[in-house]
Image (cartoon, rainbow, N blue to C red; front, top):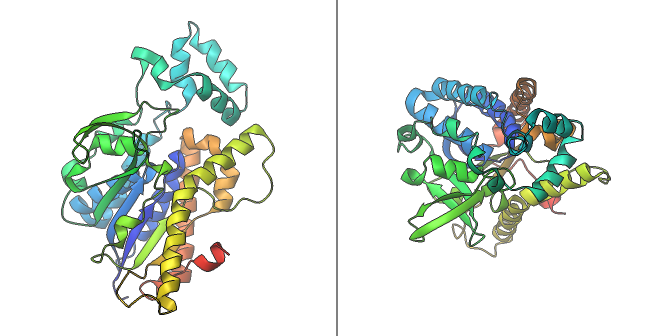
Length: 345
């Protein structure tokens, strides 16, 4: 098959990022599919770093092996849940753990995060992702060979998105992109863009994932979004956990939807002849998602990376990528497979 070049936009979503692992695992088996650029946020940034480093060092098989390594490491992390470090603040941690586990996880964790901050843990604080992120080969992550790579975080002081690229990407940048403030302390580092020490939170607040870095003229028109947070959810949430879960989904999809609406606006101007040809890029949007699986799993599994959940998500990602390839391989380079007009109609 003729080579087709695409850009990847990898959404964040905690342990649900294993779905993206499955998607990438399947896409990497297609020799005709070339990845030109990657934009990742939070779990998408971890997946993107593993993908880029693997491609730079060992090609497609190297990337598949690196992604499998990443999620084998995530499966060993038990500290994403608040109860693991909060329990250290109490004299009888076993008792507080049993108490926590006796209640609905999502509802209890939400209430707990309103009362206790990651800064309350004192010397007991550990970011459980740090030991994984520090083991990435950053010479490969930042290599000029292979796809360009962009990582998004949120500047706490300004509330604006900060996109890291090239040699700017290091362990701190990826930890910043995955820094949920109710779980982790802000990542503080020197930012050459502002000339001062800045604090960063999860990039999902401002770009989940950021699409605009992929609009540069050297990249292909096709942007394939791997979506983790359901865009549509039928029914009205009624329990505290359901309400909080839907609020989070809406919040973390809002920046993506704004960018998609802007793309649709430009495409309409081009189609109507109100924008000169070549004046702006006519971006073709594609999406791989499985809202049914994500809705069934629920928000609590985002912070509990058990082997069973990760394996299920990986399998769902492989299946979703297979469906996309079967239905839309011929669309790449020709037309969008996501009807943005219908999405916003």
